[in-house]
Amino acid sequence: MTLVDEDTNEKMTYQIVGIDEADIKKGLLSIGSPLARALIGKSIGDVCDISTPGKGHKSYEIIEVSYK
Image (cartoon, rainbow, N blue to C red; front, side):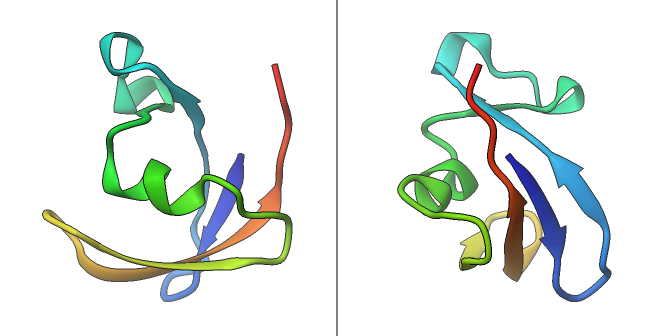
C-alpha cells in the first residue's frame, strides 16, 4: 500500500504483516499498529486520519494498493 502524507507530500509504501514479521524500516507494518488498523478496508483515494503515539494527528491519502 502506498500512501502520501498530506502535510509533507512524502510518499511511503507499507506491507501489512503479522505482529512477529513487523519491521518498519523495511516497510513491514504490524497489523496491530494504529496506522495498519486505520488502513484496513480502505481503497485508493481514501484519506486516513489517525493519531499515532510518535507523530500525533496525521492524514494520509492512499494512492496505490497491491496484494502479494
